Image (cartoon, rainbow, N blue to C red; front, side, top):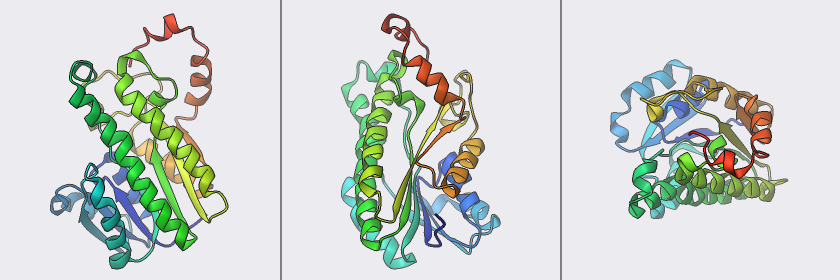
Length: 247
């Protein structure tokens, strides 16, 4: 389903979000929503160079749940109906710290799950009323079967994946679609200093697969696609083996 409405990237500084913005940009109004929105000059230039008809920035604090509704309303008032909304924000967090620091564990889950649910619900409500729109949610293979090595982050992604799956069903027939993207290890700023896992990808590869899935009206996208059968097999591993699996 093609849509000519405004493209909004929630997490406009995200590497994946920016790469996807450049692929959706030609002929479109694009809004990059992020903290310190006045410091997105490079990101704005990249999206403009990709062919956007106009590029704007707005301040966005994902963890401030009370701001989500007013922000969505303001975006529509200023830039017209939202055609494609991409939720590209999130944190990896520190698993070792989270195991001993409850506040840090809650902070990870709040950003990666609670804030996503809040914004998704606001966007879905608005798009449903308009009878059109596309939502993009970035889940992770970390949530397909949660590993001991990153169970805090993985549990948040598992919850998000389940919520998004249910929401996609609730939106069926409304004119609104929801795409769930499940990348594996992504080599980028968030994973800097970590050893890449097998079947890793780059932000550009994730964005390319996402744009392709959007154009084909898909409900899910695994990046790379080979991870889908791999994780089907991993679900069958005995727990004694699974708990020793690395991140």
